Every structure is written in structure tokens, then in C-alpha cells.
Length: 236
Ligand SMILES: Nc1ncnc2c1ncn2[C@@H]1O[C@H](COP(=O)(O)OP(=O)(O)OP(=O)(O)O)[C@@H](O)[C@H]1O
Ligand SMILES: C[C@H](N)[C@H](N)CCCCCC(=O)O
Ligand SMILES: [Mg+2]
Image 1 (cartoon, rainbow, N blue to C red):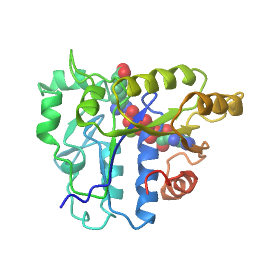
Image 2 (image 1 turned 180 degrees about the vertical axis):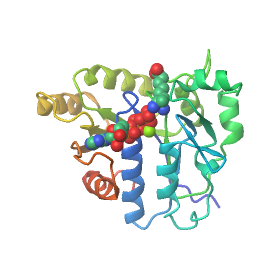
Image 3 (image 1 turned 90 degrees about the horizontal axis):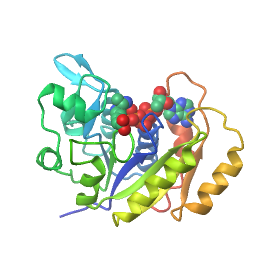
Image 4 (image 1 turned 90 degrees about the vertical axis):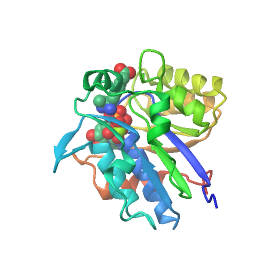
């Protein structure tokens, strides 16, 4: 029986805006509600060889949390991150260099959505990250018809990045479930006014405002803090 309630793609206004941190925080929050959740990082670039396996940091972080979910303690790295490229560059270039096909059909071949109450899928880079010369990651999301949560990296320039992304998500007929303001770059001038503008201009709800976390390497405590600031009501 299909017990899947929610399938959500975590998009960002750019690379390094906190998609992984917010994905971890969402998984953590869902686990605290005693729900089953599986995190996927289908495509990752930037990896190191560990015991004969290419491992990406995002993939490992999402695997570690997913393994805490009921029934998923034994899942393998590849189940979370099937496509891993060594250099930390645009995935379509990394794939080309590695002689690996990166396409919608290849994603569909490699990824069978696991049976889980919640499925969170972290993208790579921004919304229109290419898969190849003709397809983007967003095209795959559109084909799968999954809902989207957008992580906005709060900085000067993010209003434009956020609205371009929101408009393209909506143009594709996808549902934007909400957005998260992540102060990943530290303080921002006129942050309140910027938050206010985003709130007025994005029709989907703001699920949380996450302050800059001081720890140099984000730990479980930071994930707990962010989880506590996320409003999951729309998902539960
Ligand atoms: N609120 C925050 N406060 C402090 N540091 C943060 C915050 N959010 C994220 N970071 C840090 O910023 C960096 C980028 O975050 P993260 O890896 O989650 O970005 P990303 O959008 O997933 O990037 P990618 O496109 O590579 O997947 C990481 O070092 C992370 O620990
Ligand atoms: C390596 C990096 N951290 C991400 N995983 C991939 C970023 C892809 C960006 C593509 C682009 O230029 O828009
Ligand atoms: Mg990431």
C-alpha cells in the first residue's frame, strides 16, 4: 500500500544557501513528530573517496538523519545519493568529464521513490541547474510533479533570485508549499524590510526565519535550533 503522504523538493535561490541545512532540519522536525522520513540527494558534485566509495557531504548528512527514521537504519549511501561526482563543479560538466549520462531518463532509471511517509529531495545549486545541454533539474521536478519548498539565502540580491525562482515554479504548474528565510551569510541590512517584501510577494507561506548560526561547523544542536523555528503545520 502506498503510505506516502508528502514528496517535496528542496530548492534554493542559489548554491550554498542552506538547502542541506534546511533539509536536515526538516527531516529532524519530522522525526520529532514520530513520522517516517526519507531524504534524497539524487545528484551531488564534490566528493571524496572513503573506503572505495565516493561520498558527498550533503549525501552523508542526509543519510545519517534518514537512518534514524523507523525502518531505514540499514539503507546504503547509494540509496540516498545515486549520482556522485568528484569535482565540486556544475553537475552537467562533472558528468560530461566522467563520461556519465545525466538526464531526466537516467534520474528516473536510478531513482525509485522509496516508500516513506515523507520524502524530501534536495536539489543541487539553484532551481535551473542544468542536467545536460537541453534539460534542467527543474524539468525533472516538473515531470515528477512533486511540491517544492524554497530556501532563500538572505542577502542583497535575494529578492530578485527568489521571485525568478517562484515564478518559474508556478509557471510549471508546481505547488510551492512554502519558503524558508535562511540568514546563511550573517547579518543583512534592512533584514525586516526584506523579509516583509518576500512575505508580501510570495503567496506561499514563510515556514521559518533561520538566523545565522555561529558554530563554524553546524552540529545537531544547530539542526535542533532550526527545526524548532520551522512551522511544519502545512506538512502534518
Ligand atoms: N543559518 C545558517 N547559519 C550559519 N551557517 C549556515 C546556515 N545555513 C547554512 N550554513 C552553512 O553554510 C554552508 C552552505 O550551506 P548548505 O551546505 O546547506 O548549502 P546548500 O544550499 O545545500 O549548498 P549546495 O548547493 O552545495 O547543496 C554550510 O557550511 C552550512 O553549514
Ligand atoms: C558544487 C556545488 N556546491 C553544488 N553542489 C553544485 C552547484 C551547481 C551550480 C550550477 C550553476 O552554475 O548554476
Ligand atoms: Mg547542499
